[in-house]
Length: 65
Image (cartoon, rainbow, N blue to C red; front, top):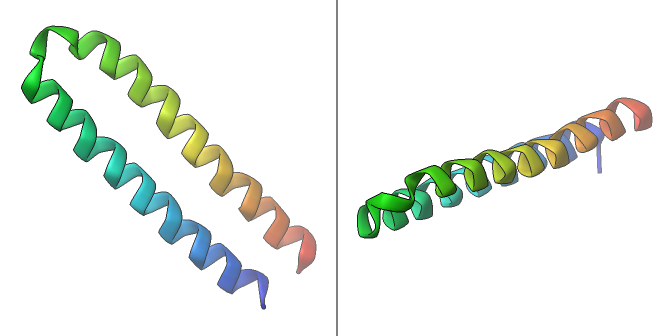
């Protein structure tokens, strides 16, 4: 498997993960709008971990290439 293909799969996973995170955040905010501040900080942490996984995969793709 080429590193570019692995990077494409990782990018697809990152996009799906962020999409699910945002969809559930909006669903939770519509149910309980008073906790939007807590949800915002959890969202930022979640996106940071998702993006971190992508950047590790990007670095590994360049190393293995």
